Image (tube, rainbow, N blue to C red; front, side, top):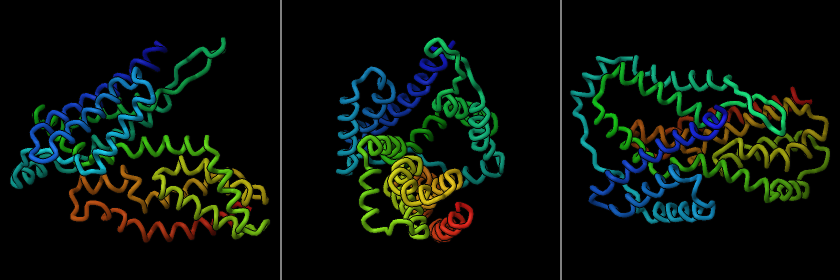
Length: 319
């Protein structure tokens, strides 16, 4: 049972992702432009998802570089799909109504419920409680949402398959950013980037100046998150390099400083295209006129206000 939950079940969901990628590759063969590049991109992604456990890490890295080159040279294009008529969409909207949000909400609720599920594993002769793999929680929640969507909307299987591929191809290479940027945070930590940042900041920020230390820490979290697109990846590097020596070591409450430091990073998330799953994907899904900056433009004013509030709260509550 332990091996099933920790190994086989996560791989099952990765295989499903690979199958969807291969379906995108199949549809790309009908493209009029960039047929080979688009099909190759989605085929390579499918290979990584389905056979990632068996492929050496160096080979996976090479495949990702090839995919990056295809994207940089604009060889990844949207496939051709049959669009529904405005009349059909209007009729479906009236029939389904607000019930369309039920599957989306169920994903978050199901994933939250599964986060409390534990199973026992033996580590060095000691029985420990282990949480489910993230892929299992998210994958199971998505399958439940898919069933609910079928019950509510009653679409044809061919329509579901077509819309799944269309959505993924609309998002394009941006779908890789969360995984790549999350891995980048671990690389930066191992490379000692935090120590380098600390040395640079110490030559500029006066020692013992709490106000400047807090401002630099908050802005560092914001800027580094904007660069990496991931506040979790930025948190480790910036807290080691700036947060601890210039804020916590000066008498700051670690719990308060850490919590506000993380949420300060989220202010950067609101203003960067690198956070593709939050800021670029919605533009593609909603088919906004501005395919890159529509969401960011709407969020930026509030993000700037929240940065100032974070600085004030950290000074007031953290000391």
